[in-house]
Amino acid sequence: MANDLRPNALAELAENVGQPFEQARAMPPSVYTSQTFMEREISEVFAKEWYCVGRADALREAGDYVTAELAGQPVVVLRDREGGLRALSNVCLHRMSTMLEGRGHARALTCPYHGWTYNLDGSLRGAPAMSLNEGFCKEAYKLPAVGCEEWLGWVFITLNPEAPPVARQLAEVGEMVAGYDMTNYSESFYEEHVWDTNWKVLAENFMESYHLPVCHAGTIGGLSKLEEMVCPPGRAAFNYHTILKDDSLRIAMAHPSNDRLEGDMRRTTFLLAIYPSLLITLTPGYFWYLSLHPVEPGKVHIRFGGGMSDDYRGDADAQQNFVDLKTLLDEVNVEDRGCTEKVYAGLKSGLARPGHLSHLERPNYDFAKYLYAKTSGQG
Image (tube, rainbow, N blue to C red; front, top):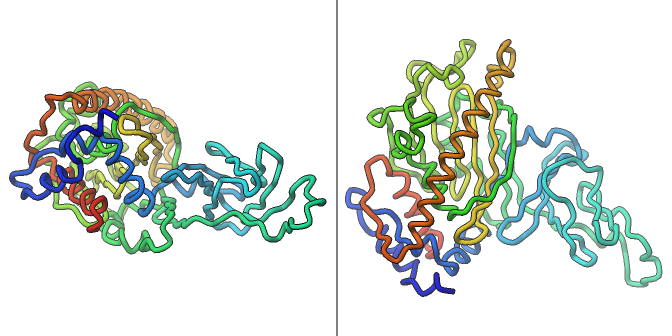
């Protein structure tokens, strides 16, 4: 492919992250446009790290499920009969058709090709017209398990049996946002989209708020001040920055009943980038998130969801607050899609050159270092 005629993306990324942050530039175009580099991301990042499929409260009842394709492996995540969360291969063990799609509720996993049916623990319940095959033993069939963990209400899966526990990797995040009580935010909406940009362009767009006054001039650009943004150095498994919101958006403030947060924390928004691709905007009143997976260099699959802190649940205007929030987030997404698709169009240009980073883009630099460590085998 033409994309692969560019200089070696990994070598260019190595040179890029070799600079100190004070002299750093954006990642080189080849890192975004190379098919070969994307395949390396799939094998060295997405096949080995934890990937978020959404919120646990969306899988409340036995049989509630969500599907995903992680590094080429179809997976179904479900609530089993015992009330636990379980991730299984979503591929029938007969002629290998995928089974469930999207998100929904099912009493069992039934293959749409020949009707083989599996219990919620992955064991084979029934297989029509198999009695004449002398080698067939129903008890020998069980869908392979996939790593699955819940952390503060988030559901993660991994194909890597040696991946460190999510809670251990993100212990510092849990401490930082303890007063928000992230477990008790209820998801009010969930959507899936595909945008025409590279997954890292969208991730980086989330990680920096430098673009807010311009890209989001029509929505949230005026709610935050660049001089109040704090962008600390990133950590091994995540980066973050914070914004102080003003009370013109009341639902971004701590609820009067919230006695867990004090001072400026009552109006502080955390923008958490959980590597590789879970992006969470967490305010004291509401949250929204993106969970990204590459489709091809110029396409990204997006899980988009959000909702309110349970602190607001009993308010008379709780439903209207949600409606207003969702309207705002949809408008913000239109702006972000326009900006990130323009960036990818520019990255494909032969004259594209990465410029120096602002101090407000510190998370992007740390993300580049994380990517290099993983794709080079040093992380």
